[in-house]
Image (cartoon, rainbow, N blue to C red):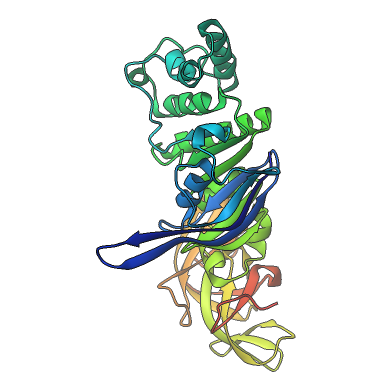
Amino acid sequence: MKVVLEHLTKVFTNKKQKSEVRAVDDLNIEIPDGKLIGLLGPSGCGKSTTLYMISGLQEPTSGRIHFDDADVTDLAPEKRGIGLVFQNYALYPHMTVAQNIMFPLISAKMKKKDAILRAYETAKIVQIDNLMDRKPSELSGGQQQRVAIARALVKSPNVLLLDEPLSNLDARLRLQTREEIKRIQRETGVTTIFVTHDQEEAMSISDYIVVMKLGVMQQVGKPQDVYDDPVNLFVANFLGTPPINIFKGYIKDKGVYIDEERVLDTELADQEVYVGIRPEGFVVDPNGAFTCHIDHIEVMGRDISIVSTHEASTKPTIRSIVDSLTEMPREGDVKFNLRPQKVHLFDIQTEKRLK
């Protein structure tokens, strides 16, 4: 089912302090049928508020919400055909796994025999059909999360909504569970909206990501496209591990300069700019124009990260990812050339990317 948000806005009013917070500001998104969309941004950017408005748990201040051609803005949550998974799972501790999964069906007056059959079918999809007699306290965090997803899926929802579903899991379990979420979404084909502040999670499983800041959508697109072509400095900074390296530079005579070093050619007019260089944009070259002082080298499996300093850096250190340590000094200075496609230039005033 396609989900369309038209000029969606949510303003919270504090009557005592006579102040307003615009949590979501004029949001316009079309979410294609059968896709997994990641709402991504830092805390307070409005992503969970957006999810709760889609679910019907919060009423928009203005704007409309459509599921396909139906306007659901004023519909009660139980009439929207949504499945919602909360951050804390919200399982009933006194019930078994089977009873937790069946609960929405029993509440909807489905016959118990049919509810049991549907619950076991759904449990097989999320691979917990061998745990149906256990209580939540007997399950791991990842297993509890699967129960919560099964309970949301058992109603055959039109839209599945996931609010920070992996934040309570440890690192390895987060990795396993996010892969399971993607598998389940592909197998069921249900349109899924996934809220997270973790850009690695969003980029790894989403068909599209929506990057938000202070209630305003910054950019929407396929994860790799957004990473490769950020529209502004915020998006460039928010996406990427290690993060992008930002320098204050300038363009002069068709060249991009950082300090007095000409690091790149360009056709842009002379002006001051922010120069963003992705870690993988550095190429070790004894004759390179970009010189840094090595602080230390981190070897993590196939990734080799050089932590170094440059006088023009706006951060204490910069990070670069290189292919090999062959003939590289372990201390002192190292010279780089840059991969042009991994360098982004931003307007010094608006912080928008320069084309």
